[in-house]
Image (cartoon, rainbow, N blue to C red; front, top):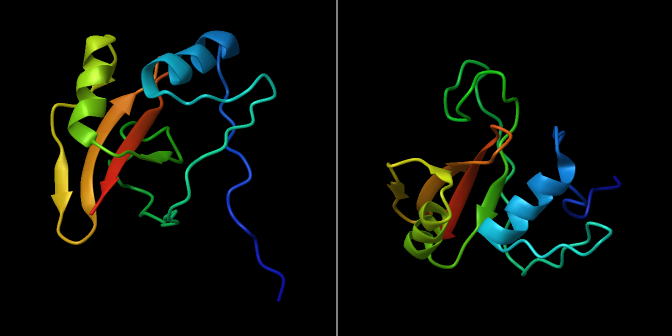
Length: 117
């Protein structure tokens, strides 16, 4: 059986694509080039499905949620707050898995930040 090799891209609709790309660069440090290519660090990727009625993604209108791995969750959340980003106050610890926090981008997309255990 042929298998996928990994995530090849993630595409987001935006009313102002340039401004949203700049937010991801300036607030999260996502340094994609002019073609959108981003060389991410090696690491695991989680693929999981959720019940259709979950509130985990924030708005029920949001059908998917992007999760970014981070080295230091507290430092990332502080950096986002300093830039005026919409950061959730709560964080979550899952034994053996890691720590989680959330931010909503300027277009209303809730993102999860994960510091692996």
